[in-house]
Image 1 (cartoon, rainbow, N blue to C red):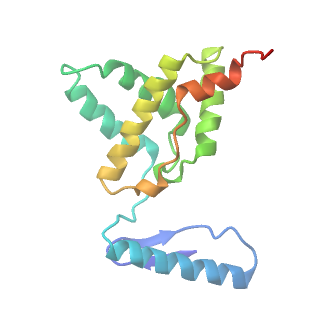
Image 2: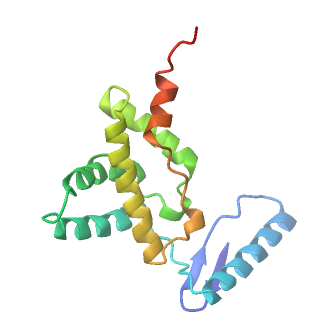
Length: 161
C-alpha cells in the first residue's frame, strides 16, 4: 500500500493480507494511526538499527575519555550491528532478542557470561534510548530486555533433591 503523509511524502507498507476488505480496514487504520502520531509530535520516519547505532557510536567515541564506553562500542560493532543491521529499530521484538541470544552463542561458541550479556544489554538500551530521545521510536515499541541472571539460570539449573 502507498499513502501520503503530510510533511513526510509518500510511504509504502505491506498490509500482509490478500483479502480486499481486510486490506481496506488495515489501510484505514494505518492512515488514522499515522495522522494521530503526527499530531502528537511523533516522528513517522522508520529508521534502521544501523543508523541509530552509528549515531550512538559517534556519541560514545566522543565521550570515550570520560568513561568505560570501549566495551559498549565493541559490543555494538561486533555483535549488535551485524545482527540487527537493516532491521527497523521500532520493529525489534522480544523474539528478535531471543534469536540474537542464539546468534551470540553461535558466534562465541559457548553460552555468554552474565557480564557479557549485561554489557550487550546496556549497549542495546543505549541504542533504544537514543532512538526514543530523537523521536525515532516510542517507549512502548522498546522490547523487554531479559536480565542476564534469567538467561543463565535457564542454561544452568541446579538439580533439586
